[in-house]
Image: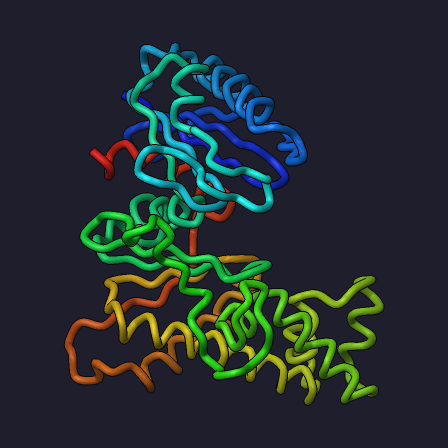
Length: 317
């Protein structure tokens, strides 16, 4: 049998048909146009879902389950309680999909949790039952899986690891707290740290690199570091320590089999991953345990969320 995964993003909506090997066999995509009403957005979700099923050479009768990954908080009844970037408040997402698609086997989950599920079952997790995924992007997204199940918490808002504090009274975070891991380890934070270093070091190669690129990006400091630039080296070293601090906290608190790190910053490959592993190994609490958490790079990229959404029917039954 087949399942459908839907990834509802702030920019685009993707619907994909996934087989029992977690492979995408057909997909369809449309802009979200997030200023619209939920009804209009869900009409488009239905349209591209039927399109993806048609492209796969299937009908709705061939679809065992449908999963939707969405920003925001999702409760047990399938309501999107709140999603600020979509202006959703108590949207009955599950029933809206059932009404539009005619399939009662519908599941709704937070998008970061779906991405974690996708990586755990179909990506770098290799089926690990205890798994944590961290995404270093505009913020620090995360999903926690214990014994094969998503950790939602009592209010279905669990797994927000980006908002644990690593520096007391530190940098202001968009969530309202100060010193959150997100405020130091996100790509946004890295760009801010790079700009601060550029002000401090006017002769740094980062100025030339940023000028060539037309902007300061998450790559700027790494590119300068590779050229031996002192300021670039300092930015990268400090940033990696911030990322490592949060990873060590997660390992010590949860002891997952696999901890996956994703996001655009991970395009740096082993330049990032090798020192992260070294820091975690040096500071983990379980220093004498024979089994240690594997720190790995995400594999599925942008497909993680839609594949994870398609798996929801399997893990929530």
